[in-house]
Amino acid sequence: MRIIINRNADTPVYLQIKNQVRDMIFSGILPADTLLPPERSLAKELEVNRSTVIKAYQELKADSLVDSHVGKGTVVLSHTVKKTALPDSYINPLPWYQFFTDSINAGTDNIIGDIMAMTGDSGVISFAGGIPASNLYPVEILKTIQTELFTTANRELFLHSPVEGYYPLRESISHLLRQRQIAASPKDVVVLSGSQQGLDFAARIFIRTGDTVLVEEPTFFGAIQIFRSAGARVIGVPIDQEGMRTDVLEALLIRHKPKFIYTLPTFQNPSGVSMSLERRYQLLNLAYQYQLPILEDDPYGELYYDRPPYPPLKALDRHGYVIYLSTFSKTLFLGLRVGWVSGPPQVLAKFAHLKQLTDLHVNTPAQFLLDEFIRRGYYEKHITLVRQEYSARRDAMLKALEKYKVPGTKWDKPEGGYYIWCRLPDNIIRHKLVANAGNRGVVFLPGETFYPDGTQGDTRIRLNYTFTNQEQIQTGIKYLMQAVRETTSLDDNQESERNIKPLV
Ligand SMILES: Cc1ncc(COP(=O)(O)O)c(C=O)c1O
Image (tube, rainbow, N blue to C red):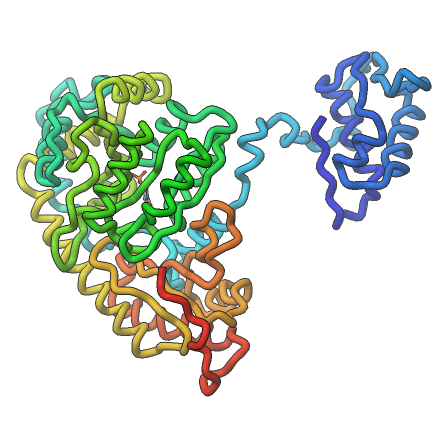
């Protein structure tokens, strides 16, 4: 029996209990003869006084909805629902939460959604999303290819495509993988609706309620939410400038016996850190030693601005332990919703099975379009273009941060990807910063979003530099740093560098 108490509501707590039990009786969730929880245990569960529950049960008894006898407890009575229509004033709003599963009820925090929603507002400078630069969308080329595709009226374009993906696109993706040093044939690729779907499928394939998943700390919040909603305990492994701390990892492997390790080794979201080559091998060796799958998420690997990154774990894995996810969302555009998974055949078969159960296949015209775009060499040219632009935007943000620096703020220069993981002064009043920056028209993502237990990271913020142009970056950082300054309890002249720990 799930009862939610709102201690700020005007309705007294005993009435909240009574009303919710009554609703459950009338909606059939508590059928006749159901034994209600003993007063003492319900009071304990709801953290209320026992007399509050007694009063709620007395009210239900007075309404002839329950009966109670000493030694027998409180039992739901059968009741005949009047067939005549109830007047509107008697119909309560449907208590939806009672129908939701526990896992879906667990994930209703929408702070990110709220902040992201502001991204579309005119006048708001958003460093919050992970969105590509809209002026670089290859609109004209896509338009030409699309017109050609639809003009030839190839019937295949309008049909279902194979569950695993349109074969020519799988071929094109396997070429891209070879450039990332991953030896994969088209059959080693299953096309998905973004890598988010890959995370969801991995959760459905591997996680049973109560299982543990190890993730970097901090990590992509979407993955934390997905694993958690599948019933996993999500445990963080700290990172430093070389990525996941493999020395700490081994102890956690022994202690938690996780189902798999989720990692973003290259230009990590949110920290921008890339795992060193040594750590990559250490991680693989630990996975081999403890017989553990690795789920590698690599949306940003192609977006390097200084020098090519180390090969993905998948390229270094000689024993088929790595499941590799990637996507076109960050290199092309988010709305495309095309990503893919590459991994051992037994695992890919499960991904394909879930793809069939979920939505059969990725949108056919999108797959044709993308395949032509890659085959005609436009993808490679586009990557070169976005690398140049994002590198310039990253440098603009680094310069602006330096120019408007508030003592105590720190950051590292990311060598690729989308984000600067900025440390704020220790004395920041973080909950006020979101509002203060918002008032100045600047949004960002708060650091705690990226930590599995949500208690750390409150002196960090994630700043995206790909979505805004250089002018907006300059203005946005200026306003953001004004807000930081205003939201710290020390002023400029006071030395606040004292307690600053190393970044990441
Ligand atoms: C690390 C990571 N994985 C997965 C995704 C989801 O990507 P997609 O749009 O392909 O579903 C994102 C998007 O922000 C991401 O940062």
